[in-house]
Length: 215
Image 1 (cartoon, helix red, strand yellow):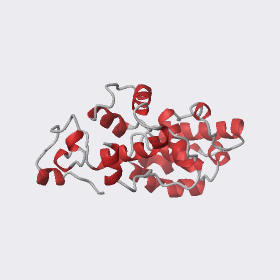
Image 2 (cartoon, one colour):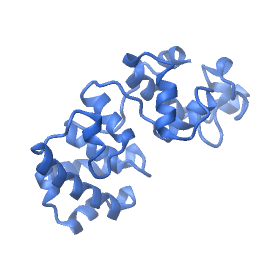
Image 3 (cartoon, helix red, strand yellow):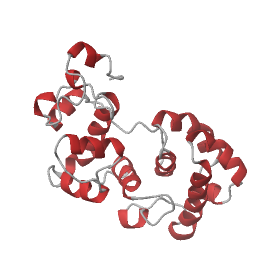
Image 4 (cartoon, rainbow, N blue to C red):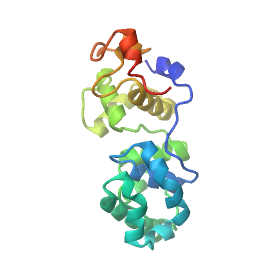
């Protein structure tokens, strides 16, 4: 199934815009309960205003909240970013750490966010258990669990470590474009013949094709 997804989405990649490890870390924190596109509309002004960890640590809360308001849950996210900046300055000389055990100690950073940064910035294998990956892993029969750490371990055991980052991107892209939560485009799915959940959505090719979003 992954080989089929690789053929279908050869350019699958992280859809958050960033140019530094800190920018990706911040963008991923903001992406909770928001879309990548929505985050990308906010981050240019945010990154220009706060170019480093010290800037976040010393940010004016009201100004920060205003800049990230459109991503939702802006008060909680502002707390995370203020705490993140302070923690990076105090414990890591303002730099984003390169180890999972360190990343998950930072405000607003769980294993999912840590694995995004490790995989897309530092080239460290990891599986991103976002909502799309969790949903599709169960639909594909790769796991029966709803617990992110169990899904990460069980799916990780099925694939070589070197493939984990690419696998995550491909599954997430498929979840956003075809394998939707409420009405998957089963009749337009290239992996349909291998999927144990085939038929949860329209199987008619014409009807299914109308559900496909982007490429």
